[in-house]
Image (cartoon, rainbow, N blue to C red):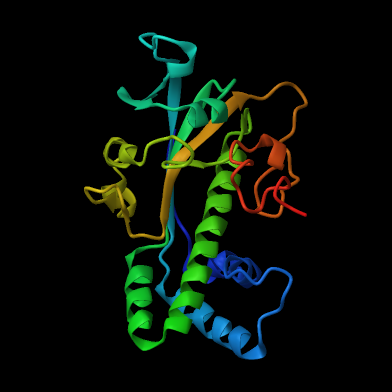
Length: 248
């Protein structure tokens, strides 16, 4: 199973989240000034005009690497259409614990967002900062949209969330091989350089774990403040600034 999705221009408003952008800017419980909010609205329009969001996901089978010497060194093998990728590290082991399959996923806002950000950096650093926060929030909204669409198509599976390449101890160096395996550059225009930095930069790659749904089991619909499912289901809860463990 493989899907490549583009978002229609008339539906891009769903990716604009000024409240989340304000949180990224570090305001906490304080409210931005009216001047900042006005500039944020202007930057929202620029982002809407620049975005060309796309995402893709493909189904993979999970295998254990039997050559691992110890349980602590155990690694996961994922096979996407006869192309195998090794996923080392404890973080991805925890994320895929108990899973029977995986979705390899990529998403991007498109290269014009990068160009617009570069232009704003020459015009106004304040506008560039606000635009960047809005773009980061839009990436997260696109990630939620990917997860929700995948869940709707895979009703026989229980899905967790998209664990990004580079999270925890899952090495960022996997980017190149993963993008090649899923043919991301041709399908959604996503590539990376020798340092594994994604281009366009407002992009994410990673893995969603799949478990077979039991009779009567429904997807959990309660999301925490970050938009994810409950903190106790998240393998990044110990380091996430928005985790309930970090709150006063």
